[in-house]
Image (cartoon, rainbow, N blue to C red):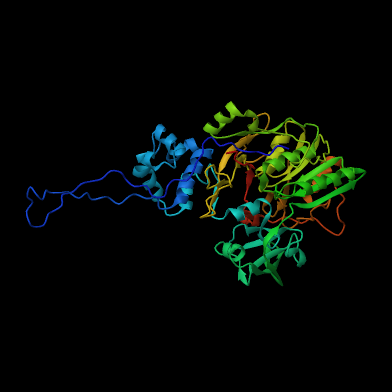
Length: 537
């Protein structure tokens, strides 16, 4: 399978940290007695102005990287190629960076002072983002690219509890509910499960002001105070669970993989929670098992999947199908300069095609399906949405749940090196950027789903104040169980009959809540389509 390798248009090395101003101002010097004579001529001593220096070399890296690769570079005035230089000076700036004698004077006169106006790389980065949190809600900068790389592989500090924090409508009461427990985590050894509720952390009631510090602060061990909901009221039940976050914990993105036999129909169910690197083989093995089980239908659960590597999305789409090898799965649109460069020099680079092998040439285990059922929520984002949008032109994609997040852009990791690759990265710091550099479309150029992808079948539940959308936290059900509401709907559509209800359970009226944040919002990866690349130069 082809992995993406990026050829940079410019070679972008480091600027010299100190560049002296060649202009000098002169001032008369008052001579001491005796008065000058023809034998002792008057001499003037020039007074040199202090040289303008670059206060922080990382600020230079931030500007250069965004100027070159950022998707909205043309829309940000301070990222313009000619904001601080003429075009000739700009070319000199990039091509003769190490020749201090020929550096444009504007580096001293305007560029350095501009960069020096920002105390931190983060503040400069934020100021250069296009309509931050409105148009671009997804670009970010980190001060430790090692932690960033680990997160892309599903490795970060975690106790294994995936949870959502909510607030009862009309109140300020904050509480959490557990959505799943990661396999082989600290939490997997404790008495805590999907559908459990918690009100306190280390004895403190969760509030809108303290949840960040209590749950996502520096304390890696804390105790949850568990709770019970009755008559639309939540209260402590006296149970506590102590949890410890494990550093460098690696979460296997495959939470559940099984085949369910419903009336003779073999239905594969795969809950996949991140398009993480280094789990290609496990994903391929999961499809080998579904294939061996004789699965003729597939329910792909992406409701908590925020995205990840685009090449893995291509592999997953190819495992679901298999009959479209070589056809275009999705396209990329970069900023103006890169788009023009690729179209002229390497148009194939912009295309991501269905494959029949993993990147190490291992043959894919494909189900050759003509339809797939995909479970979604508003946390289904980026590469997860790419699966839906990319497969839509080829097979019948039945989406069940709620609207997805609405992210169709992709990013790359930019390091502080001459060509922005990791090789020869500046050893004096570990800053890196993850800016949006491209927009994804399917083969028919469909994109721009700002409000998310709309489900074919909306999941709702009744509350005392009407109907609500999404998961009913009073009736979450067991993941992979045919009575779990989202999966039950898929089975109903596949078989034409409703799932057999557990006689020991009764339908519960739902509880209307306002979502605040989830644990995934604080994960290093966030919601992203990551393009794997390595500069050739």
